[in-house]
Length: 290
Image 1 (tube, rainbow, N blue to C red):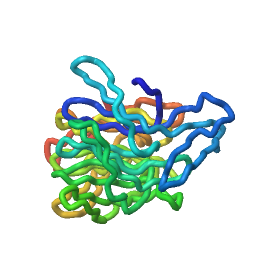
Image 2 (image 1 turned 45 degrees about the vertical axis):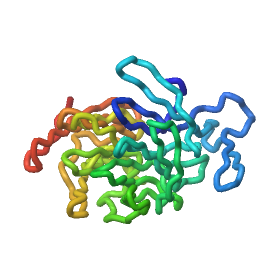
Image 3 (image 1 turned 135 degrees about the vertical axis):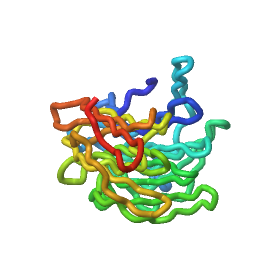
Image 4 (image 1 turned 180 degrees about the vertical axis):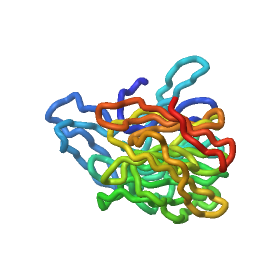
């Protein structure tokens, strides 16, 4: 990628992969690691964990047909730990954090004209959340909120009316988890609940790109949880489903081929664990290592 970073957001749109935000190590010692105009105020952030990170407003697109990257117009707000999803050819980026400030920022990018638009804020500010879309609705799930707690908040944005709706919360609070959509059902898997890592797949969408019906999750860093749950927008309820074989946190997901493949960290020194979630029908859901 043109810009090295961690804690970025990614989504697929119109056959291309888009990557937004994240943070990178500041290469200029002694200089504030992030300067941004947020709500009309200039804010400076200094290192708090021994590393000096700068939150990014970068936006980049990968064209798999030509194997090339393109630098896009920058996001209005620099942030890490945000979530991205696509609906009706438009890209929505929600939440994140700027330094230690948890954000409720919600922005939309139109790939056709290369322009960003600031939308009504997410009702609950959070970072480490996941986002998916079902039937044009934008769902923002879980994350670490401004009170410092990991929560299972679930909110939906209606692009047609420009308003938010609060939904039933997830059964398991979680952040740094994967989400994706299969058969118009949202799946949430793994993550971190503030005490231990998560392996439950709240399936209606493992934090994803939604390509060809199969969810693939990539590696994470922390000990994870194995619980998985799913949300059916038709009923408005979450339900527990089969847990992953390996608890994990910090995984990512993509849909392709009618199955969900999850990867992530099951322990600080064990990376790249994978598992596939096959869903031919609700009664035959299972995980297998792959």
